[in-house]
Image (cartoon, rainbow, N blue to C red):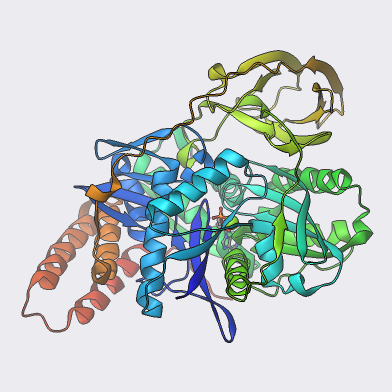
Length: 566
Ligand code: ADP
Ligand code: MG
């Protein structure tokens, strides 16, 4: 029986298997290796992946994305009248990957190695194990994402060395320093920014497009904003491989014609690129290393395809990072390497720092919300429970409104996502120069010593001004009732696998229908009706022909945005 390796990502998930030729990715029912981590539940039927992603727009009350952020918390998402926790939603993704692997390998799979971020605490790791159990997968061990990435590059075979793993995904940025010795890969330090990823680059590019065409985002219909977001996402990706992109994007009352150069995008993205530097410097100094001692820099996550990100890392380290393997695939491939090693009973020890601080320490901040719309106040951990003490960690926060003059740093202790359910330790009120929302940032550093004293140091990035305060940690937080109630997932049906392509086409057509008007809309509606009828007709022997035609029509209706091909 095969063991698979799974990368359960915030944006995308993947499954891979170990073969005689090394690790191999397993394609899903659409023949793709990336399955968006999006779940749709309606009429008790679950669908996961791209068709669910399309329905984020057409059926938002039935669809959810980015739930990995809530692993190990009490947060419940209501879908189709039922409440689901992050581990249950994750279990639906895992179950889908399990079925894909079973279909591809043609054998039952009941064991997996699943990856988690190195900074995941005990609760988040337990939640991941629960998710696997709910999906019918036996998971004996988790692998840290940076370790998996290093394994994919064969760094598990190196005798002794230190590596830096730079992981820029859709919404999060993680830096880890790994120490390889004997048969052990140890995470020596982690740093990062929980609210910085590829989505922010897309958003800043969209801001620039709106500025150039004098568009006020607030005045657009919601469907046009989501179309623009998708356009900006595609534009950003084009700019990773082309120097200039010319576009023509249609809004109901006008067409946005223009072209943008990569260098122009990089200029507006400069503040984001600057924010990548902090965690890198912190991780290196926390690990008490000199950049010259780092043997390899491994680039992970789709957003590291941006040339500016690679250039920044090359400049900071004075050498080229490892980029020859696909950055989206590394973690899953590495998890499969670990699965292969496990079958041969020679799995690498993968350890996170041990001997620890008892509670999570963090501050409250507005999260960006799904699709970056509605922010709500949440606790952002800075020092995770179970971190080795003494420890020093920092994170960067930005202003949330225009001309904001102060940032109140509210310090909390506890494991609850809602700040009001945690113990409030105190406040540092920091003055910042008034500017556009998101332009000013502060670096918040927590240092926790063996005696339980917490030092909070805040530095305003633009002025360099520092504020400092010491808190005596209270050790009286009541242990919450951790007993988990799982709702019954077995009542849910799974969307049939052999219908995956049809389902995606229909979901996509419904989305395009929602986003268009007039003529186009009528053409979508007609084609959709004809297609639905054709695939339901039992006498139809060649549904693939209709699929091709329908898909070609949808392509014509929406992808004529980019005008040149250099
Ligand atoms: P996660 O680990 O959060 O699941 P991924 O590693 O799959 O995320 O990364 C997703 C991000 O990578 C998205 O923001 C996506 O836009 C970005 N991305 C993927 N390909 C490219 C590319 N060619 N150029 C720029 N960004 C890219
Ligand atoms: Mg990832």
